Image 1 (tube, each protein chain N blue to C red):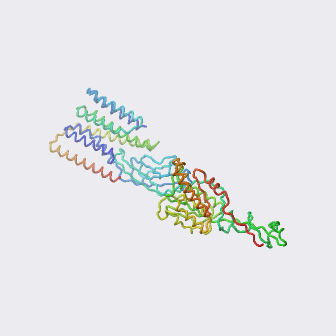
Image 2: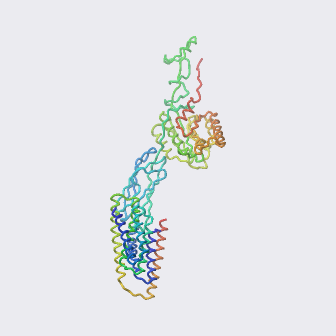
Length: 169
Length: 427
């Protein structure tokens, strides 16, 4: 039950942060989208319907990217993305344990999961915050090299995922 | 490929590329919480699962419909697993009635999970079970599936009704006293013949009426000896003669009938054997008593229909498996090609009872067709076939499986088997 409360809290926090950001900048369409998405997501979670959790997660992530490109303050955006990530993760956890975990096992599973998730999201948030405050200048060549490395990393991770998939099937 | 993994990786690279393209460090920084999440998942990714699965099934031999308790113990002999889903996959024909056959849990190194549930199984032999284990990292980005196969045997024999005593008269009986008229004079209950008095005959057996008609000789009544007999049951498991009905397949009815008959004849003290013919040849050699009943029930538990081109007709039936002049009971829906085999058994001296679950009635009940020309022709063809078998001296029970076997047997075998001639020995 604790995970469920935190899940609803995380969705609420995400909704509040993005709505507040967009209302504050008088961008009412996006503000309304944030509010509606958050409320629907909460409603679905209360009704144990978790099939659309990934779509809401992607929607809030997109709202974060738009907010970032619109020069909104970085701190609330990162906070919103972290709570969004936590909400998505907890929604998937609830979907998994609803199928077979009961009683004490469920409570312990939730507690362990929450501890790990808290550490990971907090670390991600702090590192991201530090990264935004750091100033480095890059030449065009360095930028091209970083882009190339990103592309290679993307390819390697996709190859790994494909190999993993063929190994499992 | 896990969708959540692809989603996270795509978002990370999408954000980074967008940030680089827009030359916005704050956009690139948005990918950092996701990168941290991905790295944590990679660090906690399950590499290998070493589980020991133990299964206890109790009881492992029971009649159909008995609650069976399954206790599954899963011991982790590898490293700790953040999250694991364990599911015991029930074989076909098995239904869980209570308890828990799947669980989502964590497993410490050396940890143990116990699952206990109750199930009901249809008749059959169950050997292969599968336990599916899916180990995951805490974020469910990586999943490692494992399948464990255990092979404890579970035998479910048919639940069958008890039948009243069935009178049979095989040409030859065995030496031990029993309920079957043996066609031999001696001590017994039923009158058998009259012969001249011999010294030592009990006085109360003297036939005074016959003696009165004679001038000087005394005559004695002798009675028919009652013995046990050899009874062979042939169960037809050929797939092409089987019909699936709403109340189960004809073969299942035939198996139940075979169990009832075996029990009935064994209770009377007879020596009973079983031959399952069709998908292969399963046999239980002749024997007496409770142990023989268990052997027959075990064979019936394993029996299933199947296709075997060598055994498509009853022509290859190993009739010599049964003692000569014994009683044979054929349980088969029958096809026209089987008639010569029954006639051959009769000519070899066996007493034959054919119990034939009626496929025409069964199929007509499915389609609710009792009027059409097709039904009438099929019915006439079957009637002709059964009449031909009856003419050979075999007894035939045409069994509509919608009615109990007892009723069908009483209706068809109510008359005594072919009568024994009375002999007058001597004058």
